[in-house]
Image (cartoon, rainbow over all chains, first blue to last red; front, side):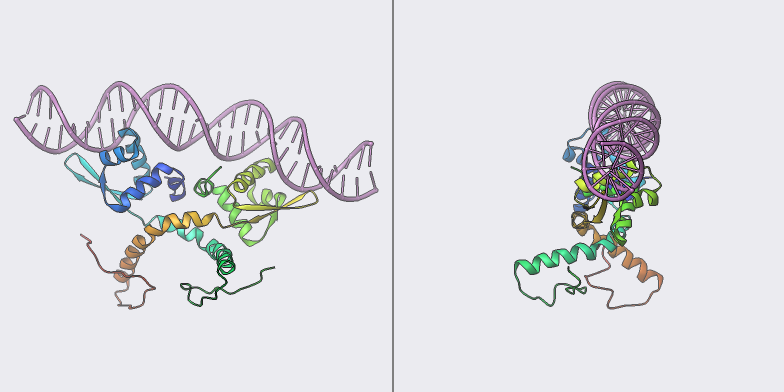
Length: 116
Length: 116
DNA sequence: CGGCTATATACCTTGACTGGCATATAGCCA
DNA sequence: TGGCTATATGCCAGTCAAGGTATATAGCCG
């Protein structure tokens, strides 16, 4: 049972998800877009299915794979405590670059804190 | 040259980052916290270093590893287009659970779309 | 039914990663 | 300098993942 982290470690699988971001697609179309063999594609799709990241809709022999993004929230949750850290440094960079105080960057608090 | 995705695929490395989230630590302390051998720990730290996710400060023979969260922004950026999708479904779930119209959920547009 | 299309599975090979042990390296102190 | 501490690296074994080919499965059409 692969975790979302395992799934995203594979570049091909990230590409599959990106392709499904636009619209659901049948296996053959993914196969062609990826430049893999059909069985290769099917195996990646299996991993994605087991991780709950895609859903399949059958239409005759054709399988339409569509995105199921919910499990990605786990990654997002893991990232959360780190986000404020890198945002702080990017903020600092930004401030440094165009030394212009901007009091509505988008949301959270960004105070010039304890920079050594 | 491992990508942030590769790095996070390993549970041990996620734990290392979580440990460094609290404060910088020397190798021996990480080793003990992880229940690994010292060489095992050092090897994970090498991967993290190559990915730019940690920085080392030398103090005598001791190496203090500290977090460098910036590369995680790449993952965050990749997740961005998916976020609105899972947030929409979580919104829907939420609305469904406590059927209470809440006109300020947090930001973006959330229309009840084409759910079949 | 026979053949064709679309996809999944079995099997195999190869290469990468993880973790362990032994050892090298580097800095400290008596 | 000799020995001790802290960390890194080399080497090895086991495991697993990814991709390919061959084949099974399932649905369609004539």
